Length: 215
Image 1 (cartoon, rainbow, N blue to C red):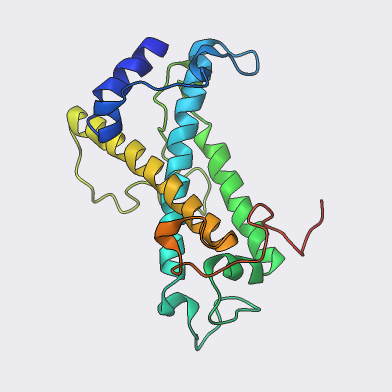
Image 2: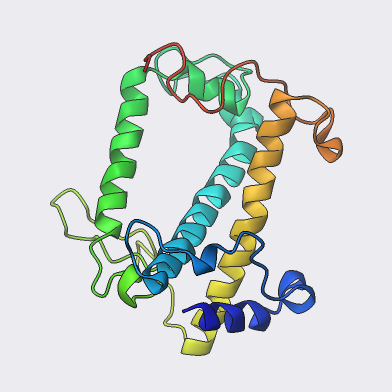
């Protein structure tokens, strides 16, 4: 509920939580999406923020990794058909074959569908951000996403709460980070702190199949 979100924001020990507290300028926590109740809408928004933060963290780290010579440089064995050394991360994506991109999006769709098999669902009182174990859902799935080798020790409830707060804060920062990389690549000078550090990009970041599929 909204009261819980206010309390959660004000209890967040980071700079934003301690200085700003609860901030909802668009009043989205007073809305109801797709005939859902207000409480279900809040659960959906909370889950979406956490999920997008996770994607942004992976994208931010992926951008850094793909910028290293070990990844973007010459390879004895080409990572994929059409690989060219010296490309920036967005250009590396553009150079990938269509079949490879479809495989990636298929995997994403599978993970998305598995993540919705929840009882209770995050829109109905479940924990936003929780991803269920997927090991054994299909014969080819032999690992879970979190702790695939089952070596992380069990955490106390207080440690879990703290971990979720850190994840949200890091996810928000990563969203700014990856968008800053893409903005600077597309419009040089738009992010002064990154000027001269990010290679320019002439493609369309919003079209993952540019030049391969037309919609």
